[in-house]
Image (cartoon, rainbow, N blue to C red; front, side, top):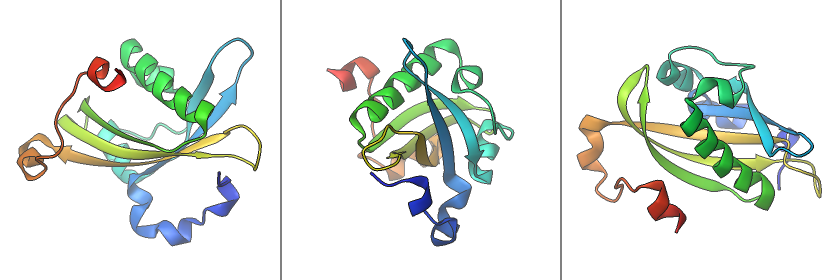
Length: 143
């Protein structure tokens, strides 16, 4: 598993607007907690503002926050990358489909302490160009 120090922003210039870096904190008895360390301008545009420092629970409605926290919690537990696809109602794109990749970061042999995420927003009007992406209920995906 790579660490944050292994990633050079200079190597990712074309990706920076779509990248977010989440801090992961581990509280006794609770699952991991996530907060926004930084987010690219493309993500800020989708969300309607800059959310650096915000906790995931404060950014999303309760049901969505629980679902996203559970998915990221599995990434943290298994220390494995995760691809995701979601339908979202975002301030900058009220009928968006969002696809992304989440990568765990941490020191060798240690816990995941950050998650690097790249997202791509696909406007509803462009969905016909992506016939392989189809909406599935979470229950269908989880089973």
